[in-house]
Image 1 (tube, rainbow, N blue to C red):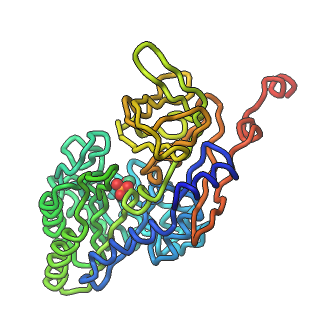
Image 2 (cartoon, rainbow, N blue to C red; image 1 turned 180 degrees about the vertical axis):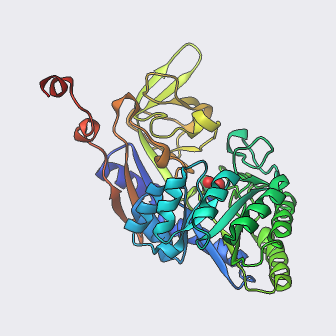
Length: 405
Ligand SMILES: *Cc1c(COP(=O)(O)O)cnc(C)c1O
C-alpha cells in the first residue's frame, strides 16, 4: 500500500478513514502458521474484538482461521460472516449463564473462566463440551490495563483453585475438552511465556478427554522501526517441540490453538485524517486533525504511540508538532513529534491502526464513526460506509413522542 494508494483512497472516500492491507494480514497469518509448522494440528482463531468488520472476518477465515469471540454479538457476527459454529470459540469474561447457554446451543465451543458458572453449567449440561480458562499468574503484560495474568486479575480460574475445579468436574461429570490461557498483551520474554505454557501442561494432565490446548495470544507487534516484538519464530520452534512432547505423553492427538488479534491486523491498518488547522501557540505547533479519541482512543487510553506520517509531503523538512484532535476535551495523539512539514489540508496516516482502533470508536461529540476500506490485489474496496446523521438519530425517542403517547 503506497502513499499514492492512500491519498487516492482519502480523495475518493473522504476522511477520516481506516484502510486495511489484505496482503499484510495474509503475510502475518502465514508467518504465524509457518512458525508452528512442526505441530500437526494447529488452529488459529482470530480474536474478533481487535477488528470486527465482517469483510475482515471473511478474509481471515478464508486463510483457514476460525474465530475467537468474547460476546454473543461477536458470535453472531461470525455466523453472519459465514463461519461455521464449529470454527468459533467463545471466551467471555463475566457473562451470564444465560448467554453461555445460548452460545453453546448454537454449536459454538464455550470457554468458562470462573468456578461459579462452571458448576452451574456443568450441573445443567454435563454433556456439552467445555473449555476452561486458567490463570497461570504469569506476568506477561506491558501496560497494566492489558495485563491479565496477575494475581488480582479478574480473568481465568486461578491455578491455586485447581483442586476445587477438579472436584466440580468430578461431581458434575461434565465434559472438559480444552484448557485455555491468555496472559494478556505484549509477550516479550519467550521464557516467561514458556513458563506459563508449562503450567498449562501441568494442569492439562489431570484431564483425560482433552482435544485442544489454547495458548491465547498477546504477541507484541512493532510500532516503529527497531521496536522489540515477540520473536514468533523462536516461540514457534520452542513451544512446538514442547507441545509435541506433551501430546505424545498425553497419548491422544491434541490441537494447539492460538487466538491472535493484534498480531494479524495491527500493522495492516492505517488511519487517515485531514489536517484542519495548524495552530501556533507560544510554545507549540499544533496540527489539529478531523478526528479525535472518538475514533482512535489508544493513545489516550493506553498511551500507545502510533507513528504518524505526512503522506501529502513525505519528503518535507521535519519539524516538531503536537498532533491533536477536534474533540472538546483533551485528545492528544502525539506530542513533540518530528514530522515532515505539515500544511492545512495535508493527509496524515497513523500506523498500527488495524487492531483496537475502529472497534473502540464511538460517537462522542456526535461525530460519525469513520468509513473502512480494504485494500486488496491493488484495489480499494469500501467495507463500511461512513455513518450519517440518520445513524445518530436512529434509536433516539424524542420527548414529543413520549408526551403524545
Ligand atoms: C483480546 C483477546 C485476544 C487477542 O489479544 P491480542 O493481544 O490482540 O492478540 C485473545 N484472546 C482473548 C481471550 C482475548 O480476550
